[in-house]
Length: 203
Image 1 (cartoon, rainbow, N blue to C red):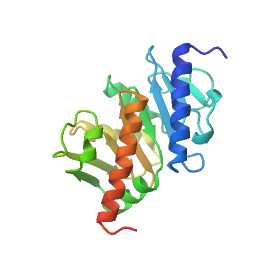
Image 2 (tube, rainbow, N blue to C red):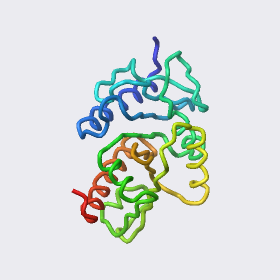
Image 3 (cartoon, rainbow, N blue to C red):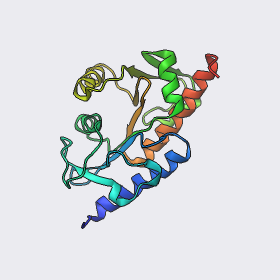
Image 4 (cartoon, rainbow, N blue to C red):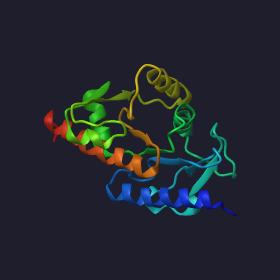
């Protein structure tokens, strides 16, 4: 298959992100899905069922803005959770969804939302300039009906600006204006979730 330079660059960045995220143990088995918006408005996204630590170019596919496959490959069942973020936020160019231990555990402990306050590392998030900040990460109930879940996320986003959300017992979604920025958000969130778990006595 002939790939554009833009696709090849995005695919390699997603592959590198997969290797890094897998090295942290955040995508066990074939869990998780990653994507990046391309210059033409289409989206590069991981093919369903591929191990994120062993990604190759063939494991990245293209979809349109509505999540429809453009090359005959099958994207994740959760593709709508990616496309809704691209449709809502023109500045978003990457969405990462790992299934990290800390994100999974923190969702079981806090149930509805995690409130992160007065941490120096909050400045890792785009737009936050001081530790004297408050970052809310909502927790949504796991649901195999992805359109219904996407509507719940949309309703929340209509009321409050966030950098990430968690699906209970499932995994974390975070996004940014590049893959590098999204990875920074992901690293910061995992550290802060671990802080909160330890503060609340979870071992």
